[in-house]
Length: 238
Image 1 (spheres, rainbow, N blue to C red):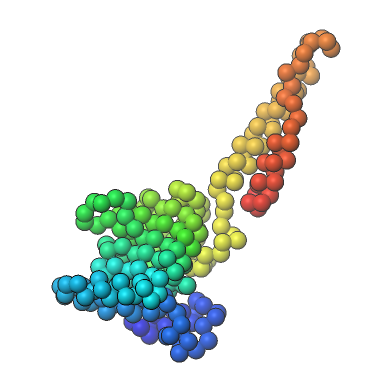
Image 2: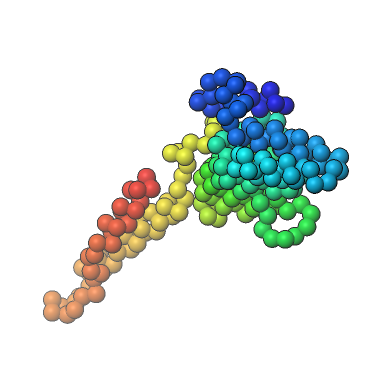
């Protein structure tokens, strides 16, 4: 399993140059090594020591993985600072997890209370996946997203709360943030275009009305709000 983890790092990280550097300078790999030992001791019922190993690992790497979490093979925690993985979380094979990710619960309920990630899942930096939910295979979760519901396989999820934005996403298991859709900006654009269309219809109706030249007109005043909206949407690439 260690060899699989090492091979995965070389496949996914262009900065990985040699085995020695990866083994001693990659906190994600070090955290996984400590976790696999702690998880084995946890499974056979050894008290205290598994949690203590997890605590020491967090101090050294900045990554907190509860000994009870089930981590598959080939998992890569890139950079890793601030990653938290809860007790009943399950991470499938060849998942890619960036810094600041939380696989946590939503309360103090007992039993299965943390998420289950399928294989080849990519979780972007700062994303929060909370509760006993199922994340399908080959799912990509955008940076900063908050996922609270089940996600079907082969999809991309972005936003707060997380929304599925693309089906049948089979092209890559790496999260290209420059290609992730901004769903909120798209909705604002659609509403903006609809408002402009209604304003145009309103102007046409006024032109066709029998209002006298001296009668006050209720035509909307031109403001700089259109420019503000356009700047916002252009910044989102929409």
